[in-house]
Amino acid sequence: MGREVVVAVTQGKLDLGPWEQIFYGEFDGQRKKRVLIKIIGE
Image (cartoon, rainbow, N blue to C red):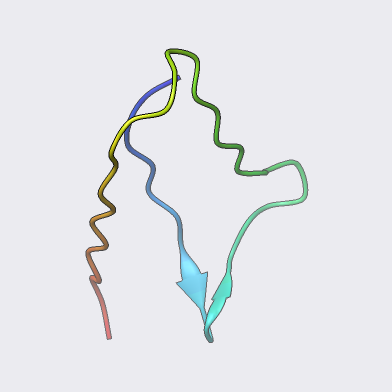
């Protein structure tokens, strides 16, 4: 488990393999969050 994830997007959709899924969990209580999205490519 980590705090970063890199996900491919193809034609506006997540490009996940047949066994890939994304889950989000908080284990230390709610707190303020921020999301940073970095777009690389064409």
